[in-house]
Image (tube, rainbow, N blue to C red; front, side):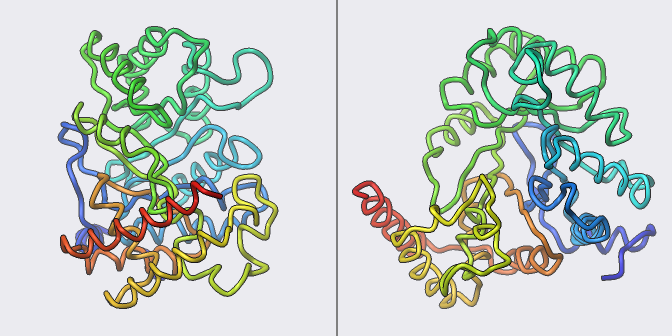
Length: 339
């Protein structure tokens, strides 16, 4: 792929993607964002990482989603991204929407995780240094912390914004009740939670109540793992490929996640997608975007990103199609609950 690097090319870049205003703000998110959770680690090819980031940007994906602990080793993803920024994208900083997070285990000792002011501010300072940035566009608290008063977490997020280290605040993995609590605390400080990042896919709809609560509060939502880590593709319909994530020994997605019930519903959805002239991955993304502001794509090859972005050519799902998908998913969830 020939990467765009001039003013005229920048105009062409944005003809590929569609954008939505997020969370009661004026900020526009691409419908498809790119996440660096997997495939940006110590074993990754730097050139492939570069191809993924620059290729995504040339497709109009302006939003890049990171976290302090993405790797392995924790921090590696941000370091790689920082090198790509320095080498290729420095002149495009104003076109990029860069997000990072803190809250999960990052370093040893009592301050290496959680929601305390100590952890959040220290972690963001480290993230900015790794990426070579003065600020991030969105800073997320990655998970709620029962050991830290929510008032302290809100205070830390306020300080981060007031110091100019982040433009917007986000949260991730909060339930509906905690989402309302953090928004209330931020509101007391004249701040608003821009966005909530939730695990959400056809096979994982358990966060539907949280998504509805966020939207009631004018908080945008962005779905991660929209393809259920590859299950919502045709990849596993004929077995587990040797080069797949399930075969790699990943602690996040192993062979035990590929159940008979999942494969049955995936096969039905795959046929449904073919009847629409789409791949299953494209259908899964279009369905997700009926609910969420944006979705986070993961990829190991630029071809995967191109295929996903092509889903934007057929974004409409009729009421009849939505009802059919609902019936398919409800039947699957009923079977899963009995296992």
